Image (cartoon, rainbow, N blue to C red):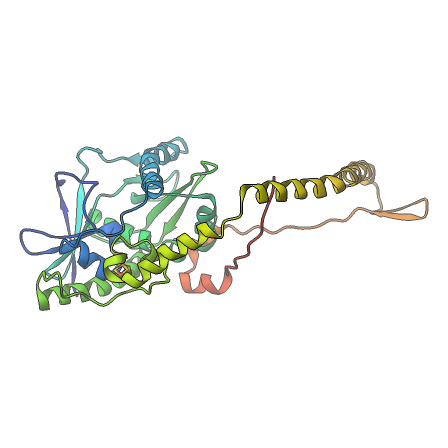
Length: 349
Ligand code: SF4
């Protein structure tokens, strides 16, 4: 599947396009931000199937807040010394990368820019994430935590410059408003674009074989348990049983809900248990602070006081520069080094 690029003027409504659509010249056009989506979902969108599971009000608000914060991130980067070229929001430059003759990936880069002191101009893709997702992105790197964003910025880079070069994904933590960035080297963007071309190339072949037939559906890319299906706007159309189960689970959750009184009682129990030990803990901390001040600067790290040994214990912490690690290592090597574990606990504050 050959890949070519074009740079074009804008469409009428650049930021509000379907994930996939057929153009007048018979090309299947995929929005770059949706290039990692399920191919069956893209087919539903392109062939005009009605949406059966629209986003909830809450998720629409999260999405709109993320879009509204993008210029904030770019201005923060400028204040940090980046030279940023922001698009004209009313008339952004559209880039397009063709995959074969009948499929095209299109989109509007968030910005281009040059990082302070070092580096040439790159495409900058801006994301916003909640605190957990932000931390996960920093620790795991974009290819593991947000592979679709890497494919997206690869498309923008080829579409903007006509060649692959390093690109930047900048991300803001919506809790703390801290931001960070990751440089994705050109060769890894090449790979991301190649993977995308192979996936979407199969959709182009499907299109070539059946034409824009709404009933000739491509295979499902995901299973009902996946987050992709659970958030899919065509879930009830594609997997009606899963949609029913999901609705039933929602109902069951409501039935099993713990009452307000139970919750209040649990919090009161927790606080009274915590306060029962708080006094001694605070007293211990105050005494240790006094002892530490006394021990600091003494020749020996140990002292005998009234038959007790007081020691000044040193501990060392090690920090990993995840930004450098992510830039240096490919995702497979990183996956062997940085592993992910999930645990759950309840906190009362
Ligand atoms: S429900 Fe799942 S498999 Fe079906 S179109 Fe959506 S994402 Fe694809």
